[in-house]
Length: 226
Length: 298
Image 1 (tube, each protein chain N blue to C red):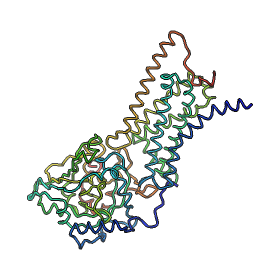
Image 2: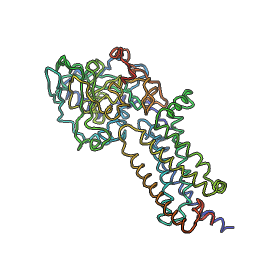
Image 3: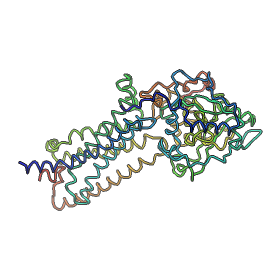
Image 4: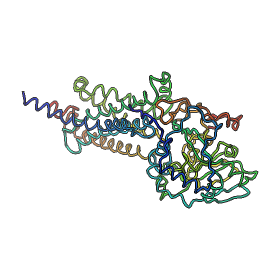
């Protein structure tokens, strides 16, 4: 009894720590808001800060598989879905800030027309909104049950959408500002690096699989199914 | 909870000792003891135009010479040395001249003008500038009959303007006006803010303010004013011709590819308000553009 409780606790504590850590930026935003320390344009500031953290967490999520492969640290895969869901949480906050505080929905009733026009007409919002939509099926299938239902192979294929979402999210950042903003370029470089490692990994794995008929790694292994 | 509650007394209304003394220094340095700080009425100030707090005007700046972020100019512009400083007036004029900045400030007494400032990024402020009409300076140097445009150039000094070491934009920053726009009584050369000398992050020691145009027309840290026959190149237009036109008149009907121009957020407000053609100065400036298609000449 106490042994299983301890096991349970051991499995969950790192997740709880990760979630707590990832929520620190959000807590700091709230703190700065309450202290009136968000500058002259607080809504713009919190839009940017939640957007920044969405991208950082997306890139962190994408870094897990290469990290596992390069270091052999298998247990790290357990945190991939947690990180992905945290990125999704930030993008939801980001979108809600845009919709409610920036555009005035539903207080300014006509705002939906502005939102629709933004999505249709402004390329950076078009790609950002697309990335947001793409993350929904991933968030909704980020449970252990969904993995079982879909099967590891199909689940993995579906969740490759995160690369598209991350690329569109980075474009969204790149196109959102005037002039040449140097910062999004760094995000793009990290994303490209992660993609290159991933493609390289797939090739190596495919070669080995051709030799040994090894099954593709399940998103749940190890250790949940072992 | 995310909205900063405006303080009961605006910072602008409190004259602290430091400001009081620097104001005196400023006034005495001008030698303009009769300087009146009474706002000029009848220039389009509206009931709901409460001046934006000084802190916001001086910490939220687009001034890419000092970095990409809005806070960068307030952090880094202090390093800019603004004395000695000269401003050359040249080109198609009968009396080209180079002014030391303090002579210029002495020669053209500053008056306070409370103007709305509308940024192309769809935010706006209300700013009590100190300055003098550009027209006065132009009349004194006597434009030739060939003069059709006025070109402005910002200081190029990368060691004090770190943004100039990056490729955010092409440097130095250049802007331009048609001569009739430059001669318009609303067009101001600005030397001060809230009764004080202009802070570096707002364009010290001399900047342009054209209140019916988007803020990027208001070139900062001016070192050269050149009258020309041809329409001069302008920095943002060169960076992205489809986004930033030469005229850049505030126009809610011409959208920018990145921002809807139909509404704006007045700094300090929660919700956006409708943007007004020519930033609310249409009665004074619309006639300058009679017969022009403002959709193509954006």
